[in-house]
Length: 387
Ligand SMILES: Cc1ncc(COP(=O)(O)O)c(C=O)c1O
Image 1 (cartoon, rainbow, N blue to C red):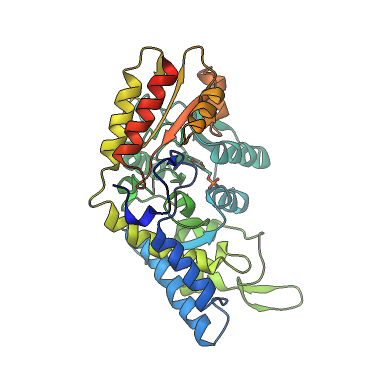
Image 2: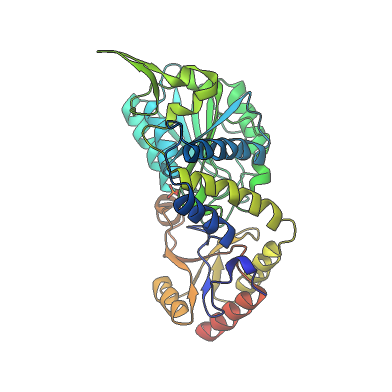
């Protein structure tokens, strides 16, 4: 049975593109609507009751994000932005390069960190190293040299969910060698956030729209990172006072440190909806069959003679191609049967095209809206197409 929270979906709509955007459950949409219909006002500026309610709920969401990751507000803060890409860029574009000797990323990154690190290396004339992730997604720590490095890596790949299983050791070694580590957690927050709990990273960037909420970017950063930021993306909402040629940043106050990344008016309703999404997700994952459904679909694909699955382990995200069959055509055939899946290189051109020389792939990514009937139907349709 489909969860009541997704009852707006009909049985013949099989959405398998959650890695891009998860579907939004009704309580999250209701929270968003409530803001727009009942107390639509600006936060952090106004003294009337609607605004005070916004302030309270936005503050709750900032704290909820930290609790979800089991991080202390003494050490970390939450800022909001547009998406993961924006968060990573806000840090990379404003980070002082003093003391940074190299930039490190890995081969399986999404274009956001992959290109972002190219731009950082060019801007500061620094060497850039692209580490090869092991087949299980880990980083070989015997070979990696993080000496004074800025490291930007994902904790789960958007190709096939491949995890950075030794992330804790990686963070430890980066810090030991005097580096900074920024995590791209876009693919971890919905279904694999346990890997990030109590992680000592310098910043974690992710997208609320990939974790059952409205479109929004989230940055969790260490308070100590702020002194390394030279704010150049700047404006209203970030300052306590402004003189002719100078200004005083609100981020200097420990209670308003998050303003360092929040130029201008924020997406208040979307921030409040994220609080609802985190509460919803925390409950849903206690009784979810999602990982079992993902294993079934992965096992089915792995057993097909002409199918090449990139996953070494099952995951809620999986990618494959079928020998001799154009993946875009396959995605179109699936679409004709009501199955919505992605085809192409999923913003991982370097790894999929230039390293692996794969043809375009098809990607299935599951979410909590999926049911056993969805998986059975997907298998049935695939069998027909393959035969
Ligand atoms: C691993 C990873 N990083 C970064 C991004 C970029 O996310 P956004 O487009 O929300 O900025 C994505 C999007 O799919 C992703 O999967």
